[in-house]
Structure formats: structure tokens, C-alpha cells
Length: 277
Image 1 (cartoon, rainbow, N blue to C red):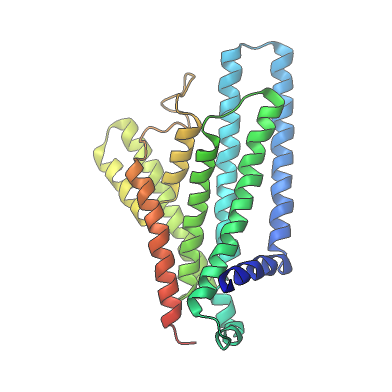
Image 2 (cartoon, helix red, strand yellow; image 1 turned 45 degrees about the vertical axis):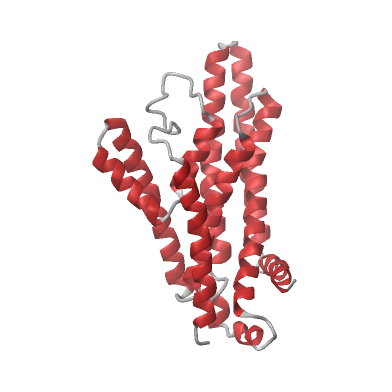
């Protein structure tokens, strides 16, 4: 009960700091821009009477482009809401008041993690879910394996958020933000190195990308989501398109990502419990 209470208070804190409302408004603005763009493109296809195969390829491309953009927005949300979760309260000495109450330190961290996880889940439902829903309502085009694909995007957000919370137990807010973004950037560039390496059949580049994914299994989860959304690619750019998955993430990597979140969260609980305030 204590953990759930802290989770609820964490969500209220994001409302008080206006992070939740700013994220909501900007998310809606993104959906409006994407929806208008897709609407006018669809109108043009209706007017010209383009072939069904061409339309399907374009709808698939636009939908995945929108999801790719929202994936970055989810990552940004995951870091921005959590980067100040522990370090900010330590700096302001707010944590001193909480620590004197009959609340275990691990309950504080876990409660905040659950609160932010709820916000990330809401973001995944609103942004990627909103794009998929609008494309379907406007054109009838629907990606495959939607719940599973969204689950991978959610797991990616949880991975970055968990790293941010763990870093906040020992680092300042600024250093923690740099750590979270740099680790994700490393995973991002590593993922593209792996993709290009697989395309060129360069095992060294593929191995380098895998190592980067082990340090932060972020980009690999987007590639897994992209793969389940379009298990049977179609169109002339199957092998070189920006959303094609040349090097397919294995089930073992997904399991590793889940364990990664669990281990890093456990380290965060342990680290904050042992820290001198």
C-alpha cells in the first residue's frame, strides 16, 4: 500500500510541476500534425487512383515513420520525468522528511518507479496507439501484432527510465540526465552499426552493435517492435528502407532486456538504501 501511495503521489507531482500537462499538450499537437499530413496524403491517393500496392507501401512507411518519431518522444518522456526523481529530492532535502517517516527507502524508489511506469504506459497508448488508430480509421490500413509491438516500445521506455532512476541515487540531476541520454545514444548508434553491418555482411560491425545493445537494450527493442509490426515487408525498399530490420533481434535479447530492467531497478533500490543522506 505504501508503494502504491508513493506512485500516486509521484503522478500528482508531475502534474504540479506541469510536466504531465506539457507532455500531454505536445503529444496531442504531434498527433494533430501527423493526422493532418496523413489525411492530405490519403486524399491525394484517392484523387489519383494509385495502385493498391503503392498505397499499402506508403501507408506502412508513414505509419512506421510516425511510430519511429513517437518512440523518441517516449524516450524523452522517460528521461525527463524521472531524471530528477531521486537526485532532485536529495538536493532540496525533501527526501529527509520522507526518510524520517515509517517508510522504507526501497519503497520510495519502487513507488516512484511504478508512478513513472504508469505515465510511460499512458504515453505509449496515447502516441503510438493514437497514430495506429487514426491511420486505421482514415485508410483502413492496420499494422500486425499491435499489442506486442506496443509492449516492446513500452519496455524500451521502462529500460531508459529505470537507468535514469538508478543514476539519480548517486549522481546529480545534470550528470544523471547526461548518463541516460548518452547510454541511449550509444545504443542508438550501435543499432544502426549492427543494421548496416548485417546489410554488408560484416560480422565485426554486427558484433559491435550487439555489444552496444548489451550496455543499453534500447534501440534493439524498437527494432523488435518494427519487426513484429511488419513481419512480411513489402515494396522495393525491403532491404534498404529506414524501417527494415536486417539484423533481427533474438528472443534472448528480449529476455535480456527484461532482466536488465529488473537488475538495474534492484541496484537502484540497493544503492539508495545504502546512501548517506
